[in-house]
Image (tube, rainbow, N blue to C red; front, side, top):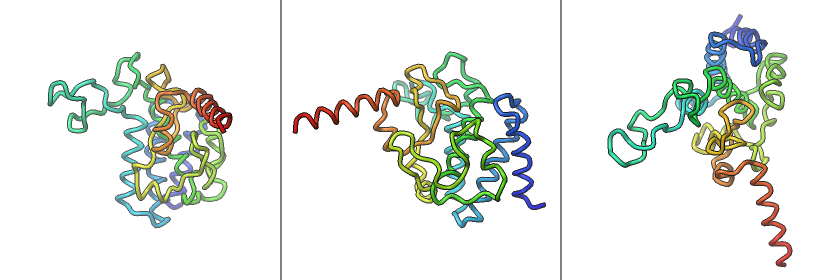
Length: 222
């Protein structure tokens, strides 16, 4: 049995727990999902270093927090930056912190991000009858290239472009964390950098309402 098939078999076993998955099992799941993504991308011809940038980005967006202190420990008064060692495992934060997530929920967000990457255009194809339909409890579609759309602009995203430039995607939340949203799979999505800018601190429903009102005003002006 080859390496990829072994990974898929173990992913199947742990995916069957769905939201009842334990901490121990979710740790195995994210390790296997990360390895599966890397191996499939390497076989697809993508660059190893570029793949590593993506896996690091997903770890920082899923299990780890954004900068979590208001000011730098190095330079008084300055906002915290990367040189502060500014990320922390989300479950080590106080439960009422906006970046908090349990280990299971934070890890499942990261798993979801991998599934979304594998559902983008120009993603490597999974072996037939493997995990394509196994994660419908976590994502809204089968894991097939081209199935994932940016949640704000509703346009496809190219995995090749993401691997070439990791900054083009960001972790976003349908209900912003600043507004009481929670870092959990139902609220977290990968989105284009531009989409995250457009959304700002609005919920998606608020954004759609605002954009529709703007369009109507421009139409009436004409």
